[in-house]
Image 1 (cartoon, rainbow, N blue to C red):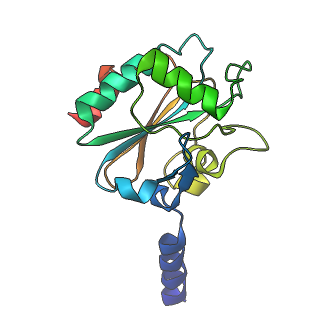
Image 2: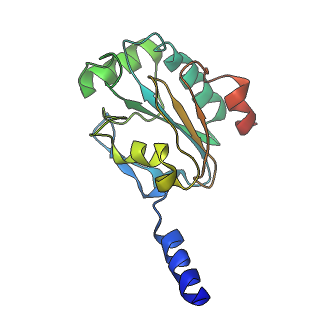
Image 3: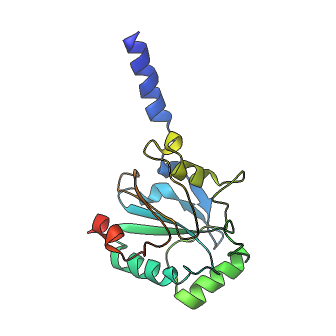
Length: 172
């Protein structure tokens, strides 16, 4: 019986989804394949263009430039909070480039909460899915940090700025 339980657990661990199993469309019309980021920290951020935290795009870009040998930041525009991301994918792309010089990967607009939650955000917010922790996205610019092995290590609320010690301590 113990061998059977061990075998079932081993199969579940092997079959459990990983961040590296996700592929999402980018704002440019390409595919963001998370498996290409093995060995790097990954910071996933739900973004919005008309939010009080929108200025964090500048610090996200600064963080990306400073740590890009060990870190990738992937922005996910979402209109879940206060209708603060009403734009189309093309409008969002232009806004990020023109106003903040964003060079880190940006995914197409998704839902990060509710019945139509994107599978990646379901994985990020559910311990049952990610095997580490439950997390709630309360507003735009919530940040999920995954380590170099793709394990979720921390979730930062909107008010935690990208260049804060709370985030950079993991990267130094």
